Length: 590
Image (cartoon, rainbow, N blue to C red; front, side):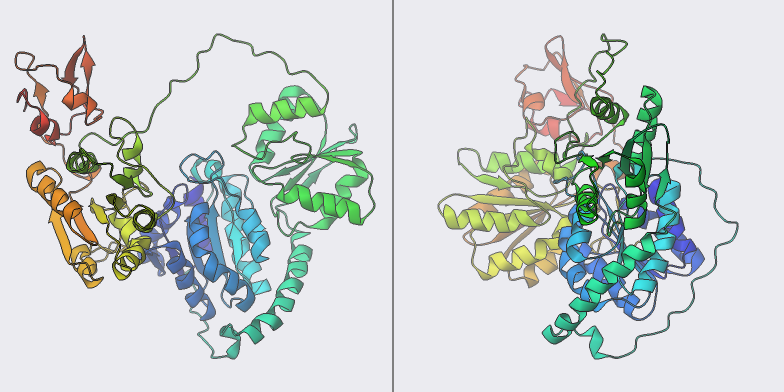
């Protein structure tokens, strides 16, 4: 898989410190590195958030160690503070920041383009077109980082991260060299005077990077002397362009760009010599297109340039062969051929849903019951529990970003102080950025209830470890940070820990928390259903069922549906028993 190829490439390059926060589609990078760390003598960690991961990698780098930080594109927002300053300070050992973009998006809040962030930070970025190239690029990225003394960004997208390809690996991987060590200097302290001086240096390094990337093998030009059309294809889009040209039989010179920023001038200018008009195809933002237009203007070239600015190429969504084929045919003035089989039905819509036996479902049910008869607002967060917004639960009214549920609830309280506000977030999210929000709420005396859904893992991204689990990424025993003790240390005087499957006790705690004046916290603790052995399933007695629909309409469990108009439990049942506890007729039993 692409993420595994990236990890292997980093190990081949001699990475010594790797840090990440899990986020799809990037999670398997650190997952693979952590499994290799012991054998190959380097350090890997799941950090509490992306900012901490990049700062950890930066600390190792200025001591001379090759270091890596990995995250998804939304995580770069969290890490942007150290990134912007690090661009000015520079690095010593190679530092590669792997940021996985998610065009579509498939599993993200935004569809943002990391190449724009690289441009903003004035840092080089590499854009792999397949897993094998991603492996080669990360090795090159470490060398480029040490040559320029700058962090270098590797930007795989979802299809590169999760595609699979045969990749030939070496028989032996060299052990990482010991780092040179940290040398004290004022150049590591970002005073305003240093920033003013280093900004000049940073701008010069961009031009140095452009010169270096001009000869990079990750950019390649294929000239077709029978065509006056040129296509600039970036990263993964190159594969779609080649296949689309083959399917249509159309001819064009193709420039593959693997180093989109700063764009090397040489290959682009060479393409212009053979093309009267140029089409730029890249997912998301016109990062390369803007640079191509600027280059053409600077050299007074008259070739017409098409892409996103004339709306031929969309700025939103994920590309595929069919989309690129239609774009190329339109560009060449050819009508798209009708589909061969118009009778193929559309794929069925599969609404995401919490797993059967998920403890979060019970937690949402409990607080909805506690809030019955009120107009309470439920603020949500990023994780499996975002699915609480989907009917029939309807228990998440807002979702912005990691850790925002608490601070948004506090803000809502200021606008509507007479209304109850309940913030939901997970255990890993609480460590990521919920602690700050909780301290802010306590300090500013926000009258809100915080519900920490502690399922003992980072579930949504693949069950990675976090500080509350007593285990590190490298499977070593570690101190377990107790959430209840941490919450009390933040100044909360109302703290309850309950099992969401104990509906009576949990319901009582929920009601008391919502009645409490000030910031209250309820910790709903029950292991993720995907990590525990299924218990004996339940069934519904047709003799006793009164068909009230509570088990179907109130819970939304994928193990409960209807057959011939009556509720039934299917083979997905995990045996949690929540449905049996809410059944008024006691018709549900093992």
